[in-house]
Image 1 (cartoon, rainbow over the protein chains, first blue to last red):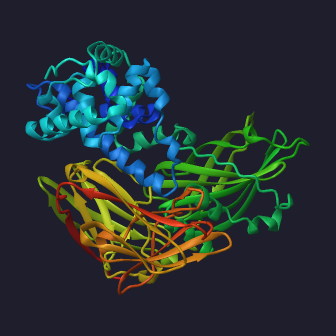
Image 2: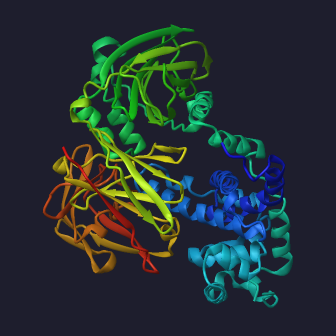
Image 3: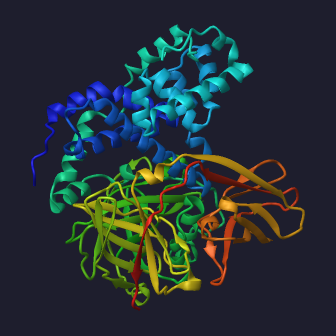
Length: 180
Length: 435
């Protein structure tokens, strides 16, 4: 058995620093506490197992969050088929109460999130990573495995759609200019 | 423009930074360490994990028509059928009952006024299905809290990794029945294996209902065949080798050795019929065991199988969803536009006493598994039970089974995942089968 390049202490530090965000990203994309827990566990397990492939000269955050997003995408795809074939009730897939309880506490925040949820999955991913997690667009593009230009165009399309969503537009009109 | 007002966005980020998953670091690190251990020590630890924690599905159904009598009455209980109906499991399990592949067991253990009877067991070298009955010998009628069997499991003299799921059904005032479905991975099994079930709790009562269940593959063996292809191939930089294929009446097992866990695998027969992921399986020391449905009855001995292998990324391409609908007014066929210019044509609908069967033709292999729902006049949506079953060898004809629905006002809804970018072509590995 070869010695792991990652010590327990390093692994613990990685977990403490990043698990809130890994869990948060998974929670926003899956809308389920249970699934977010599963994704978090699998993300770190995968990261520990593949740590020898990680280039230590680079920041770990984009690498880790990219694993999270990929695992979430795979999980959601699988859940969809499980639901279709009756192996999982539809209502088990989402738990909006968890998201409200953990992240979106005011009515205004919840209304805004509902508007974001009406976006397509790929637009929602960009909005979640850029605005809700607070990542620079370049990092969001890397995590989503898309060119920066594509990331910008998705964000642009998402904002355009949000602006057109009259029902949720009131609070948005008060917003300041994009910090990106 | 930022879609969140600044104060809201800062508040959300602040909360996000304080989130805490319910899984502690120690648990993940333990899993990581166990995964690195040599096979024997890892599987030994796995045995210590209660099967219940791995996967537990308990569905209750009032069904009071059975006599509480024991003995021969057990044989009339369609354990596997109940498991499939409630769990939506893969097609292969249906073969256990259709071909009478389970062996009778009838082991009885009584403790704390609760009697556990193991009625029958199926085993094919890949999976175990153990069916049991629980009788409460006290006077009071049981409630949902009395239903549930909590167990640890192992195979005497062997150390496979075991994953389990189960379903229970209330069948009388003081009785419930259930089936435990166990997937085996990673160890040679003895010729005459014995499943040790250590049961320390039933419902809310603690006690001792430990039982040893002898297993026999005698009934499935005539229709079980193992091949050793030894075919090597690669996807990008990742090499893999197809070590073994075992086809049983219930499962197709494919063992692949690879240094990359990110590879994704699908399986087709020689008529391009998809054999669907049957759950279970696992990976140990670079060897991945994949469980799929068995070949369809109509093509039970294919000349070859094709393993379709993709890297993780190709499976993660962007899609968008489109819906197609068609109202049923007694007129057949109904055509729904599929992916890539193809179509799905509904040829027949049978409204049976206990189910609805839909026969359809897909224009090509890519459209063979439509996400086809039935919607009744009240707007209630019905998903199919199990995977499509191929019904013809010269065209892509399939049958899907649904719960019983009324024909009046029925509508078909097909949801399509339309890829926005052309997906990468999978590596196709042909595995000849010499029967």
